[in-house]
Figure 1: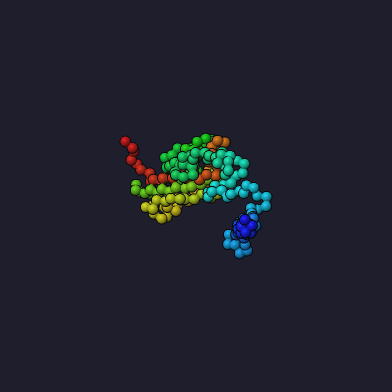
Figure 2: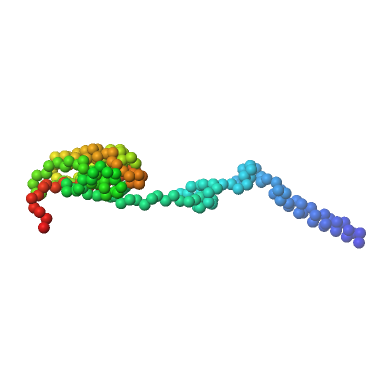
Length: 209
């Protein structure tokens, strides 16, 4: 019995010392050994909820309708007016009835208002014709905004006639401005390009049937 006691004590001592020698220092919460490739870094000081960048193409608006402003009230532009900002507003010919000096309240009155100041060049021959489009912008008070520009010319007309015809359009826009615009019309077309096409034809003795 006494001979077994030293052997049992040695066995218990070996079992107790075995796990202690195999224990890794990482189990005690110590940092990884020097030279570690992937060290675990702590978050920045005081950072509890880091702000992530918004997705591509979105604008971060803190406190407005959600994380990235999804609930923000979208500003919708007013619907474009026909002939303003793109396309041709109207057509002016020598037969167009010229409008007097009263205030303009509609878009279709801008062409007749320009006809009052348009002096088309003389055209000769029944087949003689010229056409061109001019683009310009007006301020709210009817004054000219920027410089008018001829955007299209009929190529079949002789070069000299084309130049005289385009110059007559530029002179008509300058001579008829400032235009008398109503507050509603002036506010809707202020600064927006307006394109009007002018047709010139030689006088004909034939009457329409």
